[in-house]
Image (tube, rainbow, N blue to C red; front, top):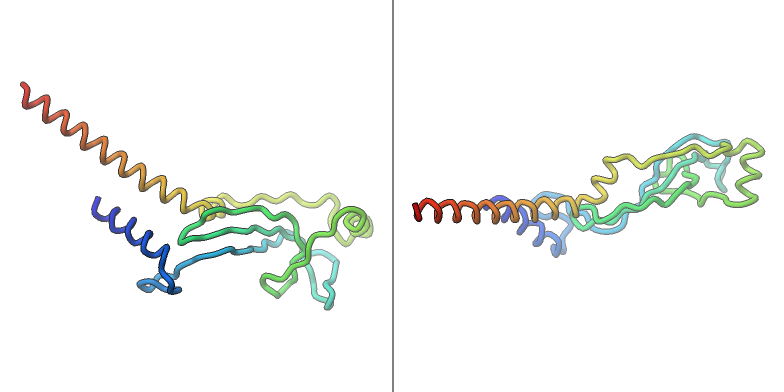
Amino acid sequence: MKRVSILFSFMIISLFANTSLYAGIPIIHGHFQDIHKIVDVKLKGSNGDKLFLGYMTESYYIEAGVYIKDEGYILGVEGKEGSFYPMPTGNDLKSFQKNGFLPNPLPQYNIPIKDYIIGYSLWIILFLVIAYYIGTFVTKQKLKQTQKTQEEE
């Protein structure tokens, strides 16, 4: 019980910490965009950069993941982390597919389960802490009732 209280207190304190490190543990705050490669494509970027077809996820963290969101297909720039072009749409997309620059149909992708677990980890932690406290409360109530019953006998 005491350990969980200390952990919960640490989480609350660190939510409001103004430093990037607290007790040597990196504190993660803010929005993050992650680009995931699916397949190389024949298209080149505006500077002749090699591109790949991928998808992007956006997540928000306050010590732990608040949410993760699928942002859909993108054209990532090979070798330049975080650089991408928006996916062409409509007639541009059809033309690129027809001329063999993009796959037709576009390959399916799935966001891995571990990304969802990390992306929603704040809620998982809160659920576990609340479940622990409820379990502790129920156990104490049952112990009190058992003691009361034993005293009456």
